[in-house]
Length: 386
View 1 (cartoon, one colour):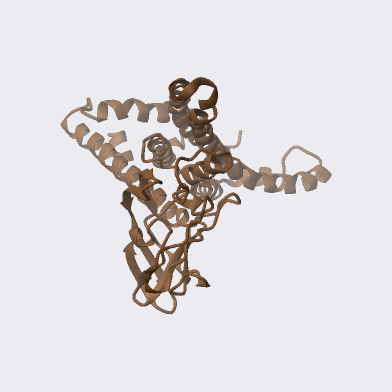
View 2 (view 1 turned 120 degrees about the vertical axis):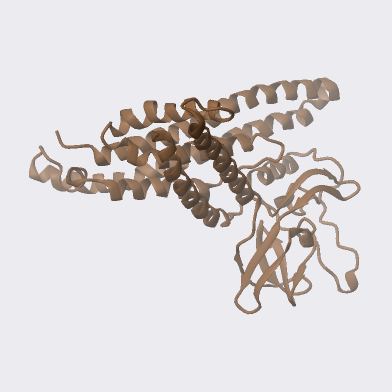
């Protein structure tokens, strides 16, 4: 059957996408509002100096004493939520200095000391220097740097292959997609009507085919690109839904990931373009020669602005949604003085629930928009001359 055949191409496209996004997502970018960790690893393992509010905003403000109740601390906490991390922290008791969560594997390649593998718990949420095979590493602005035993001097930047929070989210999404579409393909072997999870997936697959691919690419060419369109649609949608869970993934809010997905669309469009597509770019038909010369640079620039709009739209919308949700939760602290603890919590929870429901719609909408625009750009490249 057509859908069963598309499933094979879907798996190939999925693994290619996951592999490339895996490489891009490890490039973490620090934000200007982040604060560098100042805890010092002293000789003899003496007690660390307290950071007094500036400590490790990269890890949710774990260095803050007591509750997070100032504007600066709230802003640092929101920035922590949006950025990638080498561990998961589900709950922190800043008064006792305890953190409940789990670490992730750290995989580093250093030119001098070779490969290093250890768990991120060695960093103790950025408070200590981690030792591995005689080399020392620490977290600085969310990135791992090579340092001395005391953590005072940066000696270089190793190549980071670590399984970060965003990478784990992509792996989970990829495994879910393999399981779901594997089940859909197997259900077709038992009969024409899918069973189990296939009953939910088939309408969505048909929707992508009949409402996105066929109208924008055309009946003649749409089957060739169905595997890619299905991959990006479900990949983005599942990642957006994972971002609404307590694990707080923010994969599509990482501009490196959205740039990678947009690059896939860009290369597919350019390598699939026919002579009429390239003719409209470099020598626009039906216009005077002087205008052809003027329009050519504009059309070439348009080749790059299209994928740029894809990556910025997805990144900005998801990031804005997370920022609004975190800001509404922070209203609990801001409104506490006026409405009391119970009243402010009730207002914050009501507004957060309302925005969360909207975010469920946005999660689907952003996957739809990215897939629809990708199919539109592909359709422009493969459209036959009339």
